[in-house]
Every structure is written in structure tokens, then in C-alpha cells.
Length: 336
Image (cartoon, rainbow, N blue to C red; front, side, top):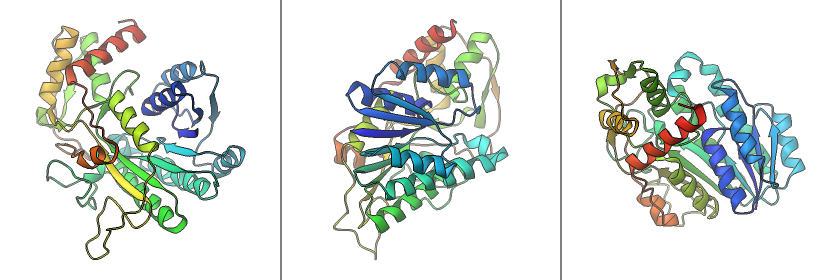
């Protein structure tokens, strides 16, 4: 396997690279190393990946199409895993232009590279639970309508699914989109809830608790996400022979295209999540209760039956174990 992983210096990208490197695959990672959050953390991830002889890193901004297409000409990729994106729902409210450049323009050039690749077996790309938007039917199913996003971040991820399907249909590119649900774990992003909570509690600062604590999330541990990505990557999407245009299945196609949720299949209240962090830290949080923020949804909860039926895997990491692992990493990395 010769795999291109975009967003290789990112949280999920780093872990996915390491998984395949341990399996002996050749991995080419790209990242633009932007300053959305601490670049030193991204560099630290890359330093760990550089310990593998079969890892090659290129600093590339996917929105620079010439650089992306040149990369595809230099390497004959068998698999492409697109994890690069401008992340963050709230950031998309204040900086929408970042999402057009990274998530739309950047993904377009990845698709163009795939279209001209002769050895490509599978394109896997990150989508998000955010695409479910105003849908309140739980658990979220890949067969639900996702036409009502409430942030540009969510809209960009829905757009990625539509763009990938189009290229899959026109050019026969096997493509699979994965809707991630609130990923957490060691080497996580500093803008994520668990990172912010642990950091502030250790500092003795109050934490912001949105929607007055009445939020629920399907928290999914990073190892489970990586296992799901790996299994899906190794099983390219195929056409659905039973697909019917009169009653179209949103999760499949007559083209080699599929969509899956990857979540823990367990919706946890924000209050319980904070209590778990407090237990692992042995400290109590000071809470600053705030209203629901623009772009946020009150609850997420993943139906993962399709994922299990496809690759025989269900995320299973217990929340207490996952939070404990993150706290241990945080204390060691930051010396706290």
C-alpha cells in the first residue's frame, strides 16, 4: 500500500499515519501546518512519524492545486485518506472563508488528483456528524436526510460528500465518506472540549459549559476511529446493485460510493463527561454556564449498524478509560 494521508500533522491524521506505518505501508503525509492551533503540537506529531523510514512528509496547502497535482504525478498512490480540513464549528461562524479554501477548494484538487491516478484503489474522506444539522431523530442514521446544516463547517462536509459522489459516478473512483462523532484522545486538538476542560481545571480556571450543560455527545475514542478508518480503507466501496432512483438510499449509490457513521453508539451528557474528567483528575471544575452557541446542535448519537455490517467493527472504548488515557498524555506532554 502506498497511502496519501492529508492533514498528517493533525490529530486524526497523525494517528492514522502511525497505524499504517506500523503495518509496513508507505505513507506520504501532507499538511499546511497552519496556525489555527499550536504549530508546535503539530510538529511534535510529525517528529514521531519521522521515526519511520517509510514516512515521507511534504508541506503542502491543498488549496494550491498545482502542488497537489504534482504530488499525484510524483507518487502512484493506491489509497488516499483525506483528513485535512479547516476544523471547528464556531470558527466557521467568524472565519467562513477558511472553510471554502481548505474544505472545498482543497478537496476539489484531491478529487482531481484521484481522477488521474491509474493505481488508485480507494478514496476515503472525513465527513462529520455536523452534517445532520437540524435533524433531531436519534440515533443519527446514514439514511437520514442531511439537507439542513446549521454551520458552514457542516455545509462544507456535506459538500464533500456530494463532490465525492459526483467523481465516483463520473469516473468510477471507489469513495467512502466517514462521519466522525466527537473524537477525543491523546494528541488531541487544543480547541476540543476535553483539552480545554483538562487544561482549565488544572490551572484552576472556570470552564465554559454551553447550553447550560444540557448537551449530549457521542464521544468516540481515537483508537476506535483509527480502527474504523483502517478497516474501511482496506475494503473499497462498491456499487449497490439494489439502489433505486425512485427511493434513493443516501448512504450508497449505483456508483462505488458509500457513507458510514463512526461513533461510539452512546450519547453522553456534557455533565457526565465533565464528571468523568473530574474523577480522572481528582479535581473539581468551576463551571461557567452559557447558552447554546450558534452552529452547535444539542445532541449527537450515531447509528453504526451499517459500519458493523460492512467491516465487522463497532467502537467500544469505555469513556472512563478514554478520558484517563487523555489525562495521562496531557500531564506527560505538558508536564502538569
